Image (tube, rainbow, N blue to C red; front, side, top):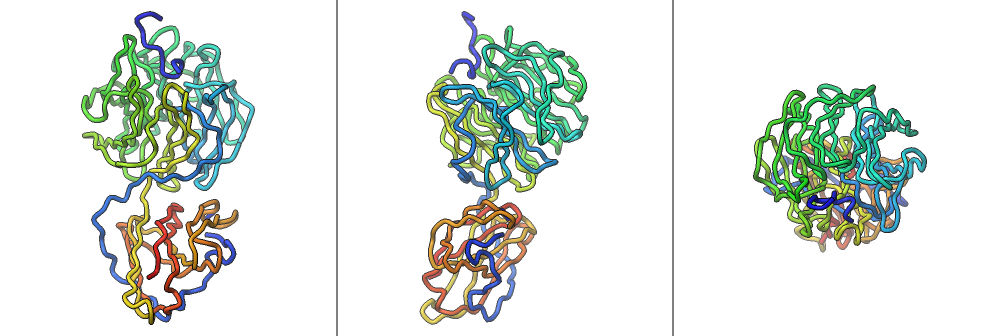
Length: 442
């Protein structure tokens, strides 16, 4: 291995009742009148920490999570913990993680997955265990099946994406007996070698399919001679085209996925030798743009996927310092609701104006009220089950429900009793289960 860079992976509940949760109790409102919404000049996209429970901390999973659109949940498999390789399968439904299986493919990391939306199957390929692996598995929502061990050399640290226009899973690059540069495609029956032209040999790169433009997008990675790339390529099913050399700094194993709601590729983190990144970028087909300024801590090899039902990029796990510090947190990059309350004369009650923005366009929102802050989890069997509210359970009330306008904004005006003073309010986007910060009524 002298003179070559080893792969990074080897170098290292919907509305519920809390007690009276979402009951039809008003805030002593005498009148509720929808007003024309006010547009707030602000970015709606933010990273939100959703959970620190679920799968154990792990890394080497940069391509190991996908969104199963048939069953509306993210699927995560395997990875590397602090002391061992893993072979468990987990699903994320937006509120909590569920252990779905402990049998199937052998323990591994540095594998790649894609969701075949034509056949409703998760496709898993290769990875590293005691050595590199050459198998192809599929998950049908209940169990894993070994499909073939033919068509590929032993491979890991590769990247895959499902081309939903042509109905094939696209695989590029990777590491095994050397650094690969071949493009191969899986049609559900067999692998086909398509071309060895295009990006140079590389591993630890990222790929995602841009459904709006019908191309597979590739970014970054490492080369055979210690190169770290920062170039962007696109595959149209016939040939590769280099489309950018600027944008995110050169890096390996970032999290990258396609945001179907907004039609952009979202990239987070990665590593260039000893420098770990915590930046977020978006690719719109013409240029890269750096966006969120805060969110998950710097890390590489984190898994990411886009939750289509809830309009959020989901990111899990990863590590820094070649697996010496490993994460088990779950984040979402999504439209983050904002709310403001104008109560001009709290001491005697009267006219209150409640405004919200950054909710789902034309989505349903719920205005909640409680006397105290705290933590209340919406129970199973209710809309947004598993969502943790920032309001205490005592006398938790539903003040009002409404629909947002085409920009995700809206407002309500009400005559409210002074008894509301000192309480707390929060907006719940019932469509995506996103929550605003808790706002005091004062």
